[in-house]
Amino acid sequence: MIKNVTILGAGLMGSGLAQVFAKSEDIHVILLVRKMKEEPYAPIIKNLDLLIENGALSKAEKDGVLSRISFTDDMGAAAKDADFIVECVPEILETKQDVLRDLEPLCRPDAILATNTSVMSITEIAAKCKKKDRVVGTHFWNPPYLIPLVEVVKAEETSEAVMDASMELLRKVGKKPVRCQKDVPGFIANRLQHAIWREALSIVEKGIADAATVDEALRYGPGLRWPILGILENADMIGLDLSLNIQSYIVQYLEDSHEASKLLKSLVEKGDLGFKTGKGYQSWTPEQIEASNKRLREYLIRVTKDI
Image (cartoon, rainbow, N blue to C red; front, side):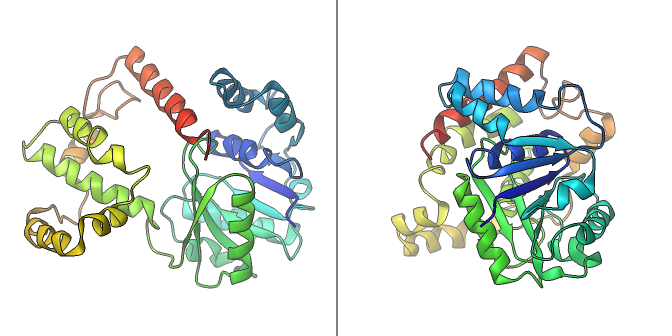
């Protein structure tokens, strides 16, 4: 049974993951940080207070979560007794490879080594490890304490026992893990998301609709169904004969470029980076940016409260 979880990296993802695992009363979490801060709990407390404000957490539950999280800047101490270790270092292949290589001799031979990446090959990340069968991909979605989905990715040498144990642990802490049986770029959900992004940008580039209209069409159309009706379930619902007729007509007109969007490239070249700069596909004031982030988190709290 997994009782000791170590998180490498105390950024937004790492802090959120500590909070996720510490929800379980029989799991202790160690967060490895580069340098101890005066208030290392601050990001976690902020997240927990938001949940309390929205009626999704009690004060007693908050205190329990915080009591099960500790911090260290010593990798050896963090890894020594860990049953399950998740690295949340930057999305740089060599950095992730080196972290797992350096971590391996410090932890028990039966410890599971999980890598949190959104698109990188788990097999490549595990390349410098000696015991590759215990390395597994766990793609958490941001913010991890609110998004239920975790993609559990099987690398070429990941054992079935490690896959099963990872799935079981994630279910235990309230996540909705899905099994990705092949180590392909983007795994499952990001492949779906980027296919939609590619078509959305094509629609804007071709002058069919502007960015705000594209978002409205998704938000108040198919996006409303997706939380409760999967797209393949939807196809079964309407009938595969009708689905085939529609697809046979429409796919020839869809975007099939294998390069990044020209519109996206041009905006980045101009320095229009979205919320970071106040302008991207649309223009954003600081008030609008704050409202968007707040709206998203409060919505996620509402819809996931009973999951």
